[in-house]
Amino acid sequence: EKGGFKHFMLKEIMDQPNAMRNALRGRIYQPVDAAPDVWEIKLGGLEKAKERAVDGRSPLERMAHASRLIIAACGTSWHSALIAKCAFEKLAGVPTEVEYASEFRYRKPLICQSDCLIAISQSGETADTLEAIKMAKQYKALTIGIVNVVGSSIARETDAGMYLHAGPEIGVASTKAFTCQVIAVLLMALRLGKQLGTLSEEMLHTYCAALSAVPDSIEEWLKSLTEQTRVISKYFRLATNALFSGVGIHFPVALEGALKLKEISYIHAEGFPAAEIRHGGITLIRNFVPVICIAMRHDPAYEQTKQVVSDFRAKDAAVVVITDQGNRDFDQVAQFVVQCPETKLELQPLISCVPLQLLSYYIADMRGCSIDQPRNLAKSVTVE
Ligand code: M6R
Image 1 (cartoon, rainbow, N blue to C red):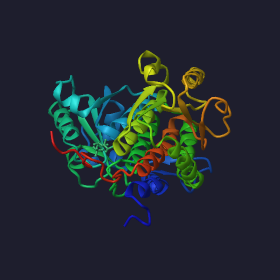
Image 2 (image 1 turned 30 degrees about the vertical axis):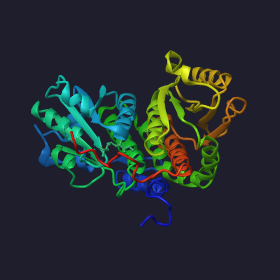
Image 3 (image 1 turned 60 degrees about the horizontal axis):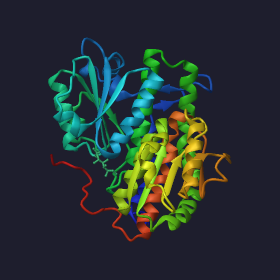
Image 4 (image 1 turned 45 degrees about the vertical axis):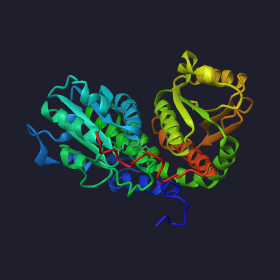
């Protein structure tokens, strides 16, 4: 059932183009009778749920007019939530807060009826996330689930939502569920942007076309990326610490890269916003410490990031830069440069996370770690 792969995690990484296509299927499409560049988004679980309508408004309409969106999640799903915040605020103009479900539920937060709580969870069974939903319901807030496992507790407990359609994820380290969560929140952000008129029709079509092209470009890229990440992994397999940096929408990707690495290879790793590393973490940088920097030309602080990368190199760190196709800015300062296929900035996390998943996988494999079932870790944390 591993489909010829050594581990489920590798199978699931390689399965991502298909999983993403399934997450997009039926939700983003070009109407047959429309002009060739016209796209539509339909999110049945949010738009059609008439039986869940309140005051005649669908869950989507209630979300669009919520006083704020609060996203509660844990682990990798919390990283998707941080990406969702960037997308909801930029594409739809809706104020969004992100909470660790475990913190949220215990600190008696202020919640009101006009809030909308979005729970993101692969398993749909994470105890803290489930409790966050129950708490929001006590205040009569709208609750929305973004869940992979059909019929799971979170899917049943929320008022409405979206399934990921990523297929079963067996490896404890989340990979394809993460990218499908990012697809789901991008679709939601685009649909909300359309609903609220914050996105022009033209922009909407551009984003939809770009989003629909992502699975194919990752599939093509994986052919060369696996070998490149294997070479980099060999170089880093004996590291004891690693740092990941990224700015804006790439900061959550850096956090996710660090989580993946520590989770399966047991190498201590931390994620930083690029410039923030100067406020403390820089003391960890020395000869041979791997620093993996995501630096895309369209990132808001690209020039500053370039400077930070040069500083790392000056301190003899071993720098890997994840950047855009054809970018030669780092040729002189990085040990390794991984060039990603082009897409729009808000969609870039779907792509930039893939080399980080593969680096963690190959490093852990070279260290002989138990990849699909890391020590002390359960696939879903149902204890409180
Ligand atoms: O099933 P959930 O998405 O609610 O799980 C949340 C976390 O436990 C999970 O993402 C965990 O961090 C993964 N093992 C990360 O790879």
